[in-house]
Length: 201
Image (cartoon, rainbow, N blue to C red):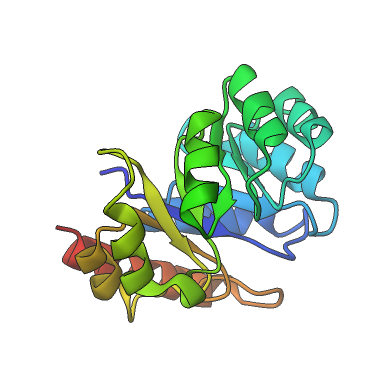
């Protein structure tokens, strides 16, 4: 089962990325991004692509420029996630055959992202939009639009988001913060996967 959960490893260092990625994949989370404001992010992403690129979708978050998109493509990344809706980043991502998940908060940003080819919408910050906000926006989005709640989504509120029509989640600090031990990440990932499976319609 391919779950629509993107693990966000903000602040991770290259020397810990393989062990943590393996723990996430073993738990059933097979989409993983390293934000570009982490230490040496391109080194981490390349190591992950080389080790797990056949079994997981590996990419970057906090991608702000087409130049970053180009560099990610060169190291084999398959996914570009941004905090904002930048048409130039979306178009560059799609031209290079990668998945595009731009950050959106308003209907205007949602439609701008979709018109430029986004694969899914990252509702960010999810804690401000909330399930009620998503429900209102979903009423006008094209059928089949993929929505991901990011920022404030956790196992504790998956059911509320699913009830509002969300498709997936980006999980950051509820899963990983710098210094989190691998065993703790395994336990958290297991709980998140169980909550996702239990709540998914």
